[in-house]
Length: 339
Ligand code: SF4
Image (tube, rainbow, N blue to C red; front, side, top):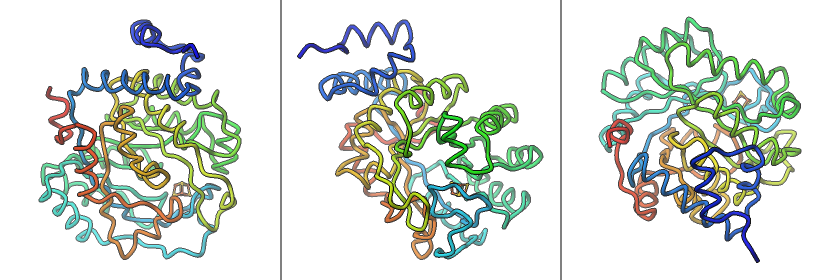
């Protein structure tokens, strides 16, 4: 069968840009076409970053949430999980362990929690930043004063997933929130000096390939520094608990599209791929990813950070082995940008 996408098609788009229809073609590509796209994505990664990837460590430090996102096990209506906020000393001690293992980027993640204030988190950021670690935040929406406070404390990166670029679907999935506010907030983060990250959850009921192409265009327009995709997995106790899981193959094509279209962003191989497919994160690297995140949330609590049920927890050995199997060399985030 003749290929619509071949090497010259890809080269032409890399040189002249991808239209919305081109992005849809990438997402809808056949397996043979996808192999060519993955190869091209690896080549773009090699040109921009060398054959290198880095490991970051995440700690999920608070799971109380004021929101009711219909897909998330931490929505405020879910009374089945234990709610927690970690002690600052424990967070810093985990960061020390990460550093002792050669990890230089520490990712502080929380639900939209009201259990801590700006000073509390600022103190944690300062202590970790003083250890010469890069601090990345994913803590939802707070005031602009808080953003400045945390920036002064040493945080430099902020992830706020837009989840879907479809206005209607966004409002259905995140009741009480508007897509335009989230996009404005991403621009606000940039204005306050942060490197920004965003991305969709792939596989929401009712999501279309058109809207996934729009996700890519939105991230391009926002000029994101970090782009990611997770595959939808239902969480127990939510309105979507019986919905089907997202499509891993489509997720891999989305990663290749991010690498080919956005080019120099940091793209993580997210745990949902490994949860759904054997060697799923290796496949992400083979489609153009260049980051993997080790989960360092204390094991006694992490099942309560229920983004989806029965999570796959990425350990350090698995992360290192996956990078090696992808024929990549482990580096640090700072080194990655010093070719
Ligand atoms: S997705 Fe985030 S904001 Fe929404 S309910 Fe879950 S933790 Fe809260």
